[in-house]
Image 1 (tube, rainbow, N blue to C red):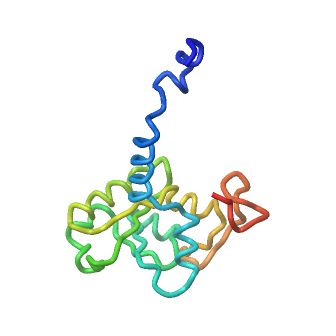
Image 2 (image 1 turned 180 degrees about the vertical axis):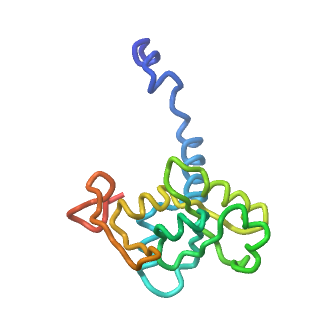
Length: 159
């Protein structure tokens, strides 16, 4: 590495060795799911193999939520998870969006209770921005996909 690239902010700390990077990214996939994969699993019909859990407040839920999601605010997880969730079924948590760590707090609370859990990256914000339908207290709504967050000419982004 040249002196110039060593002082550049991107490479000031060099990349991990390939084996370490593979372990990290493999672990990341064990903890996270993305919005489009969750949407595809739910749209496929039948049992997706997981429960999608919205950990936001009731006011936020009423404002808009993913059809079929279970509503359980994070603060209520310790007392209500056993009534709403099967401990043998993995849970995918989500909150507002990438600027909110509510889904992480919910995932931690569930993991501490013995649930298998992942976090949906992007949260409800990216569900809506990617153009998927959502329910509000007034009924079902859907917006056009934001071209900066979802492919506009293809159903698959290729990743």
